Image (cartoon, rainbow, N blue to C red; front, side):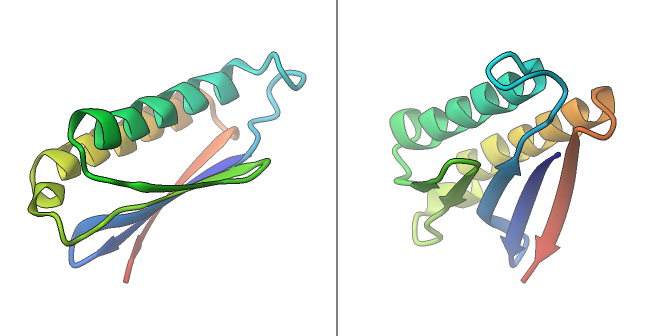
Length: 108
């Protein structure tokens, strides 16, 4: 199962962690994993290349963690809208692929 954790501080996204594998098909052919991977890559490109927000990305074999800088005021505007769009996309993928994706919201 893929677990998408969205950690907020003061109502704003601060850390996003995507871990695990959907396990719907064999490795390398899993369309659910591919959909999530593609969405994460688009999010990182949007934050770093388009909005120039300097999101830190930490990757391992089965997890990617995005740490968002809160010192940039854009994170409360365009960045937060993009992050909420990504969260909604993950919720929709979870609904379409029951048991393959779990979305968690945490407030610190």
